Length: 304
Ligand SMILES: [Zn+2]
Image (cartoon, rainbow, N blue to C red; front, side, top):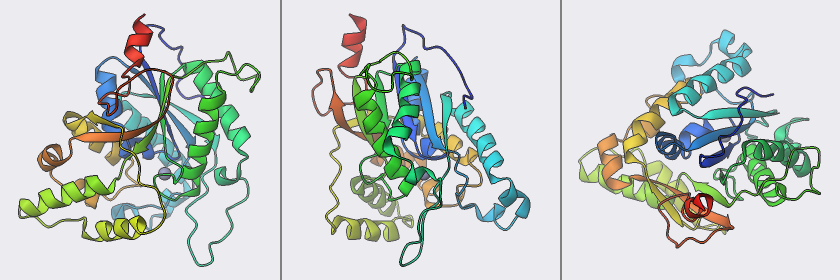
């Protein structure tokens, strides 16, 4: 299962980012990882599934049977390129993509997929990674998955369960020496506030906004009971947006290079919303909110 096996450096801060599919690491928190890499932090991306059921979203690569037949292998290679660009280590948990169910009523999830795995089983594999890499900080998705894909919701569930049990010697005794991570964050990739700020900035520059439709959808979501994420932590990462975009483009089958993600000039993004944002949900260290650093309170503790 292991692609990059490495022993953690005891003198470095360590960040683990848990993601559902190859490409999620490049669209959520990628600039933050690139910044921390440049600052000497050791970063490990854990990818729960191989993305085997992902649709081909790049119009230039659609309708090509040789791609459809080899999608799992192609996505592994795309991930290799993306992790090189970001400079992160990466491990696969080895679960199978559930696919995004569509239709009314929704069809059942395919047998054996990640979305149907018992939480304990997923948590055990992740605990093994936590006990090996020994992260101080872990990021994952909120209870809504950040986006309602069954694999994202399962990613959330196993991440929280693993964070809460990795230090317990009675939990998963065969999965390595207990390790206590210090902070757990939810990634707030696509907040309503961020879209609104980008939308306003684009209009102000006299450009056409790609966010009109997205804003409407966000408004519809805001009208439901779904909880608004609590933006506790904003990491300044505007200088790393190029790396983020290059990593995302490496997932060539999964992104439309002419899509909305790439339509907003980086100078406008840097001026209007130069941060990536997170919600602190577990902490065993002292830090003052709001924060601008995922390692706030951790640096002091680790330096002791
Ligand atoms: Zn995903």
